[in-house]
Amino acid sequence: MTFSTSPAAAGMRTAYAADLATLPAGTPVTICGWVNRVRQHGEHLVFVDVRDHTGIVQCVLGKRDDLRPEYVVQISGEVFPRPEGTENPQIPTGSVEVRDAAVTILSEAEPIPFSLDDRIEVEEATRLRHRYLDLRRERMQRNLRLRAKINSAIRAAMEEQGFVEVETPLLWTPTPEGAREFYVPSRTQPGSFYSLPQSPQIAKQLLMVAGFDRYYQIARCLRDEDLRSDRQFEFTQLDMEASFIGQEDVHRFISNAMEKVVAAVFGGRKVEIGKITWREAMGSYGSDKPDRRFGHPLIDVTGVLAKTAVRALSAPHVAALVDPDPSSLSRARLDQLVERARALGAKGLLWIKVTGEGDGYSISSPVAKLLEPAEVEQLLKQTGAGDGDVILLVADEWERAVTTLGQIRLERGRHLADREELDLLWVVDFPLFEGLDEQGKPISAHHPFTMPNEEDLDLLETDPLSVRSQSYDLVLNGWELGSGSIRIHRADIQRRVFSALGIDEETADSRFGFLLDAFRYGAPPHGGFAFGIDRLAALLAGETNIREIIAYPKTQSGVDLMTRAPKRLDAATLAPLGITVQPARQG
Image (cartoon, rainbow, N blue to C red; front, top):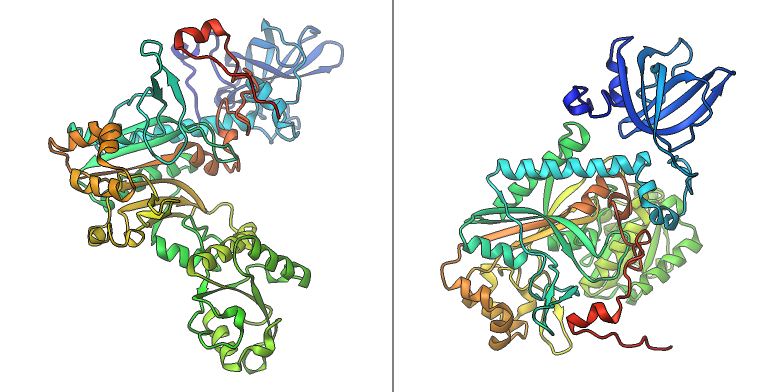
């Protein structure tokens, strides 16, 4: 990256560290930054490494004993190549130095509580308590600047495709999108509350009714959910919606944005985005967010074992997996996999070890004597297993069998995945409902504004769990980046879905009357999508925790260790809001 050295862009400096290697010898420069290290060389010479956000450069000055690490300095001198044999090839600026340097101390610094060297592990709580120091580290500088590149590429892609950026409210109305919401008390309307948006879902649908045609926003959203490595209370997403389109159009819009993001982050790298149905993803990988990078899909062997004498394999569905790493499977480890399958909800797991090839093969298994030779032959043919392979089998109801073996597949093979590969995948045709609640009512798999598959509309009242939705997810390396759908734009269909969910007309009018009213005045067919920028940035940066790509994250308990939020408020502050705090329960 090249930075401008023009006076207009320089301010107190004329160059950044990364500029210096490109300048002619003898060029006068002024740089600003933090003292990274001070080294005394003899009695009259001091080497000072100065760090700015572009890199580190060595500065040579006369004897000086008032400089310390992390002092903020301005240094003026002339750029020259380092003497032969003293270059540092480990850094981009290691071929040059600033000589005859004059130093101005702009700010002193006390000794910092931890090293900024990325090679030294620092307890996360310490890093978060002093986040302003942690953000000086090269890793964090790189991650947040990568995130900025992603945002820039997204904006460019969406604007090139005719989308207009519209900001939707942060103070909004409660909506049933499946997650607990944060509420904000109203001072002017005592006893009433706003909610902070889980997403701009309804607001962007109303923009379609308003005729904006193509909307996008890099939106801040909030959910009061338990935190983990890939979830924070606050998150940022690309949110988009478009009118007069179908699923393929949405896929094209988002695919174009993702291609621009990958090219921006990896310097022009191309990426292909595949497509698979939800049913295919579950059947082949036991997951609706499959990681395909290490192969070894699940195989349906129900037909092969339809008449088997092995009672443990007599089930509606038998899923097989050729283990991705058979050399690590001792008998003790196989026993652990059996217990793991039971812990995941299946009745158990059977294994078959294969030795030899062709007519000379043999198998070892707890059920080896119960399997017919023809069954074994067909099983080996269908799975492609050969010498040294181990076949893992789970027999149960379809969904439990595939999800159990799919989880075991991940645990056995994810370490074999190519970390440099980007496996982007559209998953389509999700079920509209994911199960029944305690009252026997369907539960929305996404949100209640998702359009059912037109072929399945007649099943809404008679067989709702068979209804497919016009929804789709984008998956990267086994992580769900985001989801979207074609929306319901007709009030009659929306009311039928509400009814299936147990939302009566009075409740629907109370909670969503403004949306249903809008549909009365001409709502175009529309659909959209949103993907999490935090999660995307983490994956592209090679991080496993989204806290590493967020400037000021919360801990897993929801605390900001730097500001010590959340904090209790006194009675005088709460009184205008009509709020009193009850004493904490004991025990």
